[in-house]
Image (cartoon, rainbow, N blue to C red):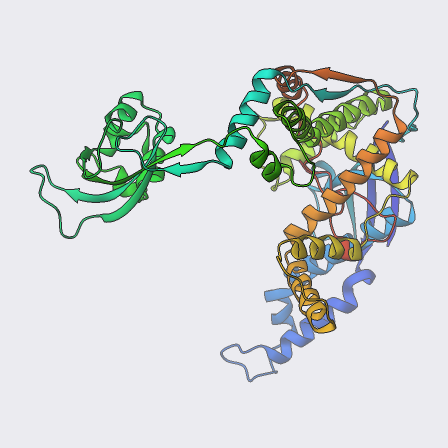
Length: 478
């Protein structure tokens, strides 16, 4: 067997693999002999079928199978030995491979097209400036936070009449058009929060009601849509979607939430141990708390902007025509020729970022080990336990739970990605010169929408268990 490579463009090449009979003949004959011993063909005793008949029946298929194995192994070994960094996967050259005939040749030539990865010349430096944003909690937003906090720690009373922000409990019964109860129909207790209703006329219909009041409800008319009906009535979509179905709601109780007063008792419940004495101090603490709640989102925006900056700085050229062909021939991408012009730019940027990210991980020796993933899972699990046992037997049980969760490959993959993201984020914060800018929440939403992309929806590790410490190759699919 002989393998040669020829560059066909700046970032493309074609590999030629010559396969002779000597490369597969011995293995094929062994397989066919095994078939002969096991064959059960009418007219012949078991194990006595002529080898010529076996070859006629199975020869081509066995040869094709063995050649495919040889090609796969040879191609993988060649790429590794020659240290060729490729994008996508090798694609058979249909034009050059079209004349193959296993019957007529002692030697067969196979051709595979490659898309080569460009060299990356990029170093993180503090000369690169990327803005970081802090969301300003204005008075309107602060009032909403305080209002929600007061409601969260509020008390429930039972007024005589229902109001527009109350919750009603009642008995829901399915009735016919004459108002008679249907014995086989729905009969259940329900809770309806008037704030969940989108139709103003429906809210009004449920306000000003006394206990034991009765209201007739046709779901398709009363609610904004079927989903709202299902949520409020706790019935199936099929039931809620019936055109003529009718319910009677009997009000059993009315719940009105009285927000907690802005006084020391509330301050201590919300911020225990901080000794907040005045409303002004409380408002300032809530403002800080609200600002901190946005850090995760502003970090994501910063990360995305760094990504775009690095892609711009690297100016990586790609074998575009090869990658478009690879996308079309890859069954997993499910991209049609009509989609390719729209889909390809995002895929190309995703591919560029994967290469840049791999280089950053390698250059900065950033790794995530299995024990770190286990520690992450264990920490999360232990935080859910109100009272922990501190003894060897309990620790064995905890480790057993971790073992079980580690079997969930999809969840483990997400944790790997989350840990890599956190380390890259810290690296970017440390390496880049960044100016902190205060913006409103509305400005942040506009910025985040403008910068929204899918560059990071890929795995940092496609097989954590089998990957070496510095191996962060991505499968370049989209």
